[in-house]
Length: 366
Image (cartoon, rainbow, N blue to C red; front, side, top):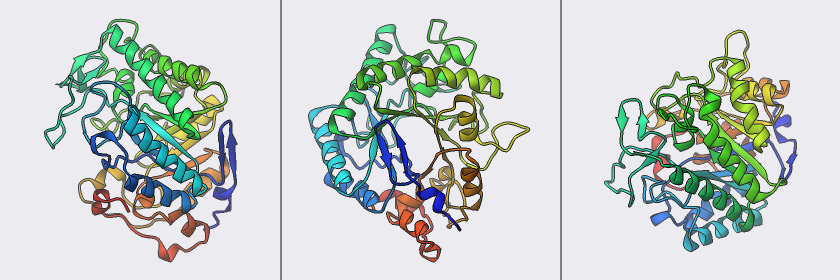
């Protein structure tokens, strides 16, 4: 494989990346009571030393009483947690890396298998985490206002700690995505509505508040997905025109990069074109995009939780689309979770040394 193009630099505002490979956010649950440990810092620093262009952290939750359903998910608030993140970014920078936290509110969730529950009920647009499943409460106007403020504070702290960018988690059925989806947003006020642009108001207000807190020169990414854990075939935007009406207001509100989550990056988003989600997002908005979804491995991420192993796979199709200009950055998940030297092996064409992925890798920080 001729991978030279993936190793060209990328600059945008506060980002100055040595290559186009991004470590995708992957929940690890190794932060007791929300505080990232030294082991977490070592885990990310290994990827920085392994020449990852941009590390995006696992989802780290904002300061809301029920923003998380797991006591070991990291927080991005509070003195101890922020000190833990300071240790992470200092070490990542010392190893020559760039990093941004993924800022998260889970919204309405299923109860965690451990039995742990937050101190307040889960919250979301309508108390639903999927159609027909109510396990929380509908947010009041003051809940929404406080949540928007909490997103902004987390972004402010990210910049103050010295991170290189920030990513908003707006995908995969979590809070922002629960507002996007008509099946979990049944509101009749200004945060609901029949159309996707109407249901995007909450996301737009979060983006604007974050931009207000970090200024114009700090790179802001948002991760989006059409699919939902409750419906893999869902499409929030059914047509390119609907996608335009969804994405362009976010670009105007302050998003610099769209991180477009798919289960398989090679699948076309709409009939009549082989462009994937990231390809369409770039075509529509003119903004840089990140593609993601089963890069470098057979099988897809969700199947790993059911015990499915994956083997290394060719990057030829990814490179064809990248070289065509469909997207600007490539997010890699499981290969980097299992092997901190994956980027170097790809760069040096050491394909015989690439590792597969086993479910057991989820249970340890390698």
